[in-house]
Structures are given as structure tokens and as C-alpha cells.
Image (tube, rainbow, N blue to C red; front, side):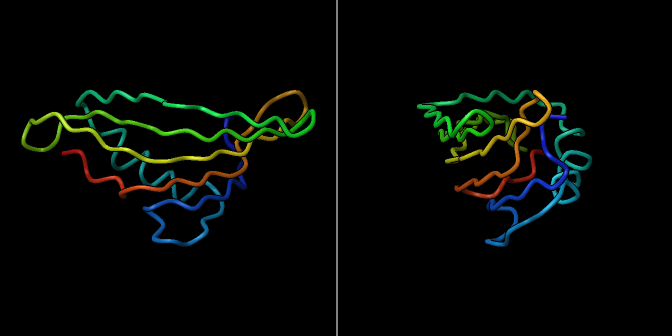
Length: 108
């Protein structure tokens, strides 16, 4: 799995709260993203990777997401994101995520 089961995150959807674990994210995957059949395109801009020893790294970047809104119009949203990765047993896992920007709007 790409995410540690104890993943922590700050993100707009959590309204400023620190969220721990995957249940918060699973709700979005199961109820929003998996039911959206409209195309979504993501672009990562200006990634900066900071290697912290042999088993840790941090990446900061801007994410542009292009999608079709409920009225059929193309839209673009932007978020600023940071992810902390930890290598355990030779595999990299995301252990912390911080996202800024507007909360994800329902893609109807």
C-alpha cells in the first residue's frame, strides 16, 4: 500500500483538523471519486524533493486538477501539497500529507 495505515493529514476537507488513519479518506474514495465517471487530469508543478537520510523524504509541489463541473464546463482547481514519505522494509509509504487550497467540490 502506498499510504501508511496511520497516515496523518491536514487538508481543506478536514476543516483545519489533523486527521489520522484512512477512514476519513476512504469516505471520499468510495462516495465521490469512485462514482465520478467524468474525466479528471492532474498536473504536478514545481516538485521539490528533500531527502532526509536513507529512509525519509519530503516532497512539496503544486497540484492542478482539471475536471468537468456539474454544468459540463471545464474547470481547474489548485492546491499546494506536501507529503512526507518513510521507507520501511524497502517500501516507501506516505506517512503525512498537508494540502492547502479550496476543499474538493462534488464532481457531479
